Each structure stands twice: as structure tokens, then as C-alpha cells.
Image 1 (spheres, rainbow, N blue to C red):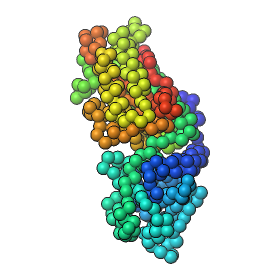
Image 2 (image 1 turned 180 degrees about the vertical axis):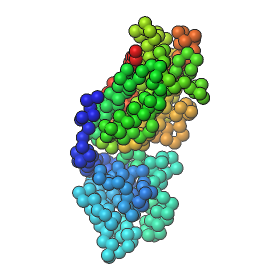
Image 3 (image 1 turned 90 degrees about the horizontal axis):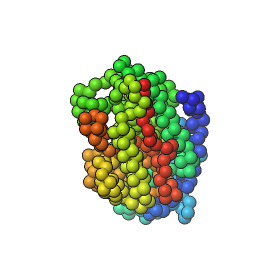
Image 4 (image 1 turned 30 degrees about the vertical axis):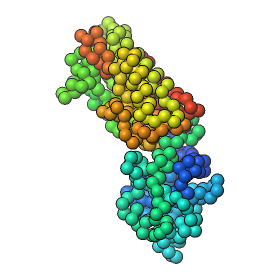
Length: 416
């Protein structure tokens, strides 16, 4: 896997991420404050109880909040002041406005807000989005008490601002994303080969740990433990109470893996088939099932339109798929700074009628998604036993159109 030699040193990664951050702060924040009609945004949290938004707003060398960190974004016409009321500064990113020798931190916050007299003050509280609910009860109470009236009454939820900031990808991030996804595909291709798998000897756990070690050795941070599972005659995805773990000829293998690199996450699922003696391809029934999975992917991308809610997209996909005789499940999610990232959910595996709240959020342009789904198909060669094809590929919505970041799986990896 030649890409391992292309992973940048940490210092170079930090420089890239900081360059991206400066541009994001300058271009995306003003647009979102205007869109959400918020005059001043407060991000406040304490060390080791970080707001989910905080680290995406700090330079790359930051490891956590420091004591109590307060960031302010204040609209001033078409510009936005970026201020920090923190004991440790962030030169080049935020202007420091607190002198601890002159006033208490929350007194400074109240003074700065009085001087700017904002009508709507956004704070990170939400009943819908975890990403917009990072302000603790204590911090909310302290801020309200420090501001007093009339400013405490002007506090409003900044949930959509939080989600908007986290989900929006800059042009530079969109340009970089395909290479990240390509790296994931390369790891899967190697894992699903005789370089890693020896039928009759290798277990699914062996492959899981190979993937995990490979990511770590390359400098890629897995954001969840990869999985490998087997389907075969007599072993379905559902009857996994005591699954066979030794990989054998005739098995349909499935993997799920994802990592962070340059602050961005990937998430992918693909399949391999272990050839029996004399076989050169997977059974026709499995090939037809993969085609049905690809068809569901096609429908999914066609229905992802700016302005539609995740629930509207879900309904449209399922109706079209079922009308074509496909047995579908769809549970797609945004990608970005997090693996299960901020933005609209398009179903959950156990909520195929829609996801209240998070599924009602609309799709915006310049956002990235993990297109995650499955189909169930009867396999004649397996005595009409069902097989489940579970696919997950990463795609971007940009310029009003969906496109794969690095293609998709249209044929099985063959091991044998």
C-alpha cells in the first residue's frame, strides 16, 4: 500500500489544517451567522468537558479546552469579530480581550456583550442535536447570571449554527477528501486478499486486527473498531449468536471501517467472496444481489437534493426501491469532523419510517455523506437462503449534485 509513504508528518498536517481553519473562520462563520440570524455566538466549556464544536474551532495543536475556554463570534456588518476570553490565547485565530489582572472572566464576557449590544445571542443548547447541545447546565446558568437583563433574555439556541459549521466543507476539504477515501479502499483491498486471508486458517478477528494495526501504523486514527462478518449457506447475518469465525471457501465476507486523517472522517463497507475450488467468480445469485445494492445506491444519490429533509429523501428512496422489487434498508449519515457527523440523518436501521428531529433537518450544498444501506436478496445457489449486501461509500453534495468521492464497489473482491 504505497499511500502509507504519503501520510504527511504531524507538523505538515497541522499546517494544512490551520490553513483550512483560517479560511473556514473567515468565510463560513459570517455566512452562517447571517443565515441563522444570530448576532453573537458564545462557545464556552471547561477542560475535559468540551463542547462537540470546540475542537473544530481551535488550531490543530490544541488538545482540549484550557481551564474555561470562551470563544465569541460577533457580527459587525458583513464582518465577524473573533474573540477569545481565555487565559491561553490563539494568536492568528482569535483576538484576546480578557486581562485576568483587571476583571473576572465572566465579568469580561458581560462587558464585551454590553459593548456590542447583540439582539440575538446564540448558545449551544439543543433538544435535537447532540452537536448543538454542548453548553453544560452550569455554564448556561453562569452566563445568564453574568449577563443579567436584558441580555440573558436574548439567549437563543444556536443548534443549527453548530450543525451548519460542522457539516459545511470548504473547497479545500472537498478537494482533499477523495484521497482519504482512496486510502480506505486500498486498506480494504489488501485485507480482502490472500496477502491477509488464508482460507481455513484466518479468522474474522485476525482481519479486524490487521486493519486496525494497518491504520495505526500508517498514522490514521480509527474512529471505531473495524468489523468483519461472514455469510454462507447456513450462516446468515441475522443468526450471529454463535457465528463461525474461521474464513472458508464459499464465504461472503463483509467489512466496515473508518478513520480520521487531516481532521476528516471516512466510513466504508464492502464485500469479498472466497472462491471454492474450480470457481472463478461468485455465484450468479450473489452477483445479482450486488447489482441490486448498486441500484439502491443509484436511487439514493438521485434523491439527495439540496433543501430536502433527510426524512423526505428516505421516503423517496424506499418508495422507488420497493417499486422495483428491491428489499431495502437505508441509514445514511453525514461525514466530516466526526464519523457519525452533524447534519441530516437519512434513516436509521431501526427507524425506516423516518427519524424525528434529526431527519427533519434539510440538506445543504457542500456537505459530505456516508451512503450506507443494504438490500436482502434470495440466493438460489444457497438453497434460496437470503443474503444481505451491506454497502457504504462516501459521497459529496456540491454544486447541487451528488458524486462519489472515490467510486464504489461494483464487483466482489475475490479471494482464492
